[in-house]
Length: 395
Image (cartoon, rainbow, N blue to C red):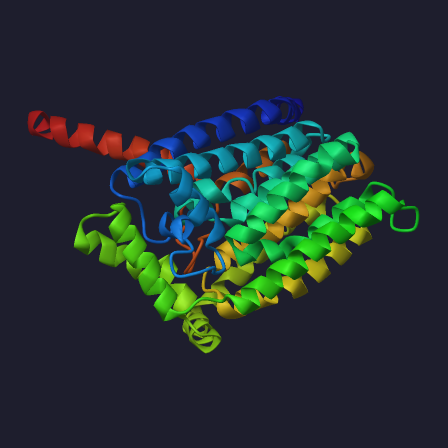
């Protein structure tokens, strides 16, 4: 019995180091993987969504792409997308890892931080993990660090700035506004909040409201989709007509879809998407283990209601689940000093298995790809190749 406890204790002491090593290796893997994608010309959704611009007039999702096209020469556009994606992913992971290292770092905190529905999601589902919600989540991570470190309002300002950038890049950020307001109000408490805190919370709400108005006035149209595709062709991003056609039938086409089209596309994924319910329950396990306070549960309820439109008109259910649990995880990590050691006790090895044996697909039904399979498959493939090479000698 002592041996078991000693072994599990050694695992517990190694959890912080394991978190750093896993995220460092995963990030290096992602750099290599995404560079290979960019070197082939990018991918219609993962890359094309970042290059929607104002070629056909102001339109939702177009501000960031417009900025890239205005400041980057044609031969550097795809590289610029690669750098933007990697920078946001790096900062997002770094801030979340910092929060974990400031937490009690017990097994439930490890499971929360490296959950496949939170920090591991971009690496286990890279096709959906490098989308524009990274901007809003990075802003929220900065605000969560600000709360944990009790930073002044001026140090919190980058979160508001990034939030506005996220709003201009993709409408998914607007659905995160309850979490931003929630975290701002945690600095002093709702009843004790001063004038500046209320102004800061109001700034998030006002920015989101202005963004919603812009989305309503500039939703996009097939004419604008054609104009954006022509700008890509004229700029020479994809000179090959066949490749250009692929991109013009990917992320940018959603600007020309009606709400009814989007609802029909989402409904077509049922009943298959019901298989995600078990993964949602699994993703919620660390929150149960940490005995999160009631106000976080209130945030979860509000955030779920606010996110419902995404689940109605967006087919990428894994991304929306990732956004939901990232919001809650960052809020809990920001409050880790208050939550403290009240978590339920589980073996440290159980936390390692939890983060290793499942994953969340960004779209579609579960595929079974996990951290364990991500590590084991290359090793198995290498071993199999060696066996094939020596098999003639064995015969």
